[in-house]
Amino acid sequence: MFENAYFGPNKTNIDPAAAKALDKNGMILKENPGLKVEVGGHTDSAGSEKANQKISEKRAQSAKKYIQDKFNISGDRMTVKGYGSKKPIADDKTNEGRAKNRRVEFKVIP
Image (cartoon, rainbow, N blue to C red; front, side):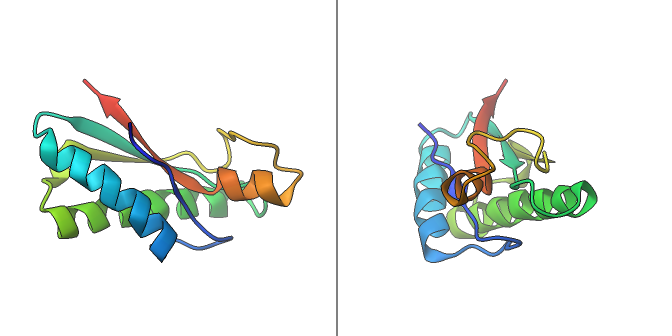
């Protein structure tokens, strides 16, 4: 089961908490060489949709690069997609909800 990596507001860099989740995901990919995933970046709804789209793409790129560099996983096994604020998983009206929405998710693809 892949873990979500979470980000601070307007941040795209990998902090220690995000690194911990990405390390688990990297190990899953290393142990399962046939697995391909979509790395989906997400934001909360603060800011413009154009800015959120860019941030979500950068978050996904950062996560992909981290796993490629640390675990030597081929880039063609990870597809990057930015969703902006279009797919919230929590209430964007609360600080806790916004924090959950600022994430990168890993989804297995065929």
